Length: 199
Image (cartoon, rainbow, N blue to C red; front, side):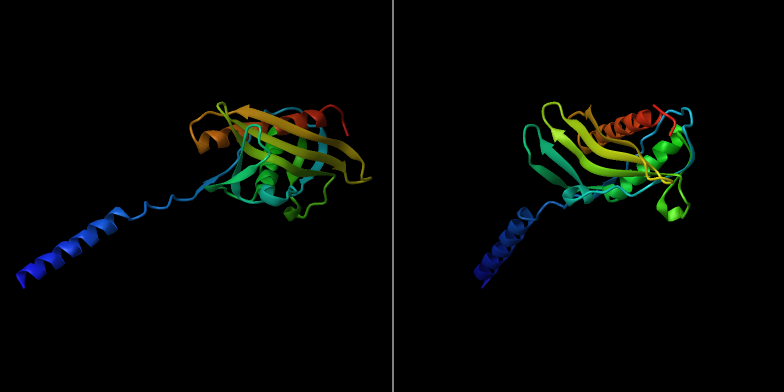
């Protein structure tokens, strides 16, 4: 009887140890990232209200997971557990509103939710927003940005704005910092085009 009890005890212990060895590691927690580009204050060019519409995006560019590609590859992938704090069309709309306000390029900068009749309307389309992985990774963005006068519908600015900023192999937060700097550079080029003339 004692012999069978010992065998049962050893078997139970072995099963317990096996279960402990096969316990999966904890699932990583989700992380969320924002963009906070800042402009240098300059001269006001648009003497009126400027409305910034929500950016247009399709496919993975409209989703919250951060994107990455490998240099030389056309494949774009989504990171697991790493997300923008809002969907990129809303995130970049808010970022551009903040950037334009800090730049001083317009008298007032609003969004459609504020229900203000605008003098000018800015539209944006996201073409690229990702980390390009390599020995020297980069944050890469491309936006199509437009400025249109509301009174006659004239298109005053239309261009694609690209920027690539070096990152480092220090992880996702460093990559997000590089993307934020690239967004800042693209927005700066757009504001520079607005300042080339008085609409």
